[in-house]
Length: 125
Image 1 (cartoon, rainbow, N blue to C red):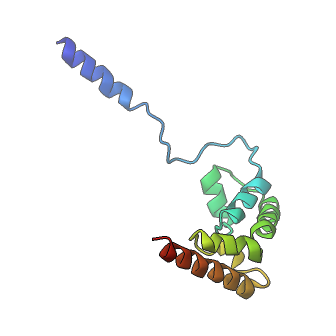
Image 2: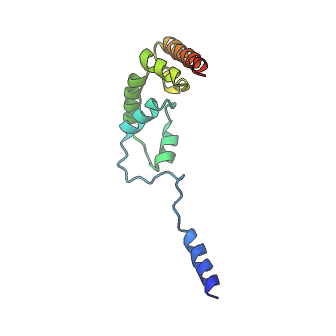
Image 3: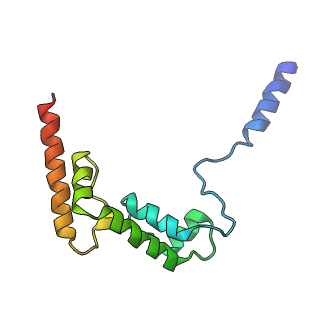
């Protein structure tokens, strides 16, 4: 009987776990500029307002602040030297750099890095 009680208690408590995949609830104090910056530097495509609202449990995301932060993040990573290093390290070309001026040159710098990284990997076998 005590075993059943222990299992019943454990079973009841297991339903109280937090879902780590659920978006974190917000209190209306989301730093939208920081969210946009982080999206850009991680290489993600800019999110639309409905996606931001769903991801951050926000009724009305501040799209203007988000895009300002996104542009700031693009300025940080959408540079030939930075993208060359990404390529050397085998990272995919960031989607956040696809729509910027000189995207063709940026992609070429990234490709040179990818080629160098592959060459280095073959020579270090």
